[in-house]
Image 1: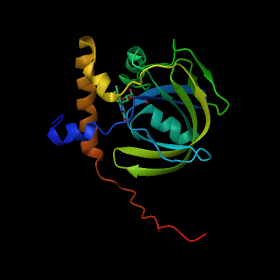
Image 2: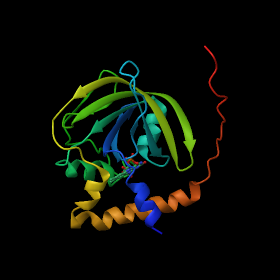
Image 3: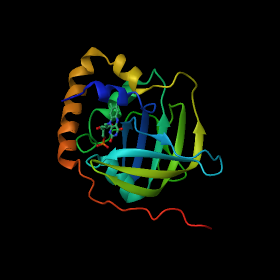
Length: 196
Ligand SMILES: Cc1cc2nc3c(=O)[nH]c(=O)nc-3n(C[C@H](O)[C@H](O)[C@H](O)COP(=O)(O)O)c2cc1C
């Protein structure tokens, strides 16, 4: 089943589309996700979290390097979403090729064209079954272009006809993988807060 009424409502609970970039031992890559969330209300300890499926190349690069770049996008960046979010870097030699970017102070690739770029350092992880939840400290922020943020809802509603088949095929394949990986294996119970 690709979707149902309940999942369509849950789908509304999505972040803007975020381009996540990563680098490890000379290999760079990028992907798209809509599962990023601000994880702190403190400007002194800015944090965000992302869920990344375990089979993505980005997953391995973030896991190994402990760092990633997160970029907010605007509604005119459909091509970038297609380049990073439709095919894995395991199949494409260099997904960042042709996308203007530079390497930030923390070593992660930073896209030149975006609303904002965050350089993130992983501070904790959690096994979430098909994906890993990465909690990260935002170590540097770069403001970019203005414009309306690109959300998952907007992207799906305006998906070009020519990309629809590929989008659905990817979705179906991901759901098949999720079925096999649904169980959370590493269930570690947090002991709760301790008095400082
Ligand atoms: C609109 C959209 C939303 C996506 N959201 C997520 C997500 O939240 N988590 C995830 O792991 N993959 C998500 N993906 C899928 C990855 O971006 C995609 O599979 C990508 O090719 C993985 O690249 P990699 O293997 O090179 O890392 C999304 C893709 C699109 C197009």
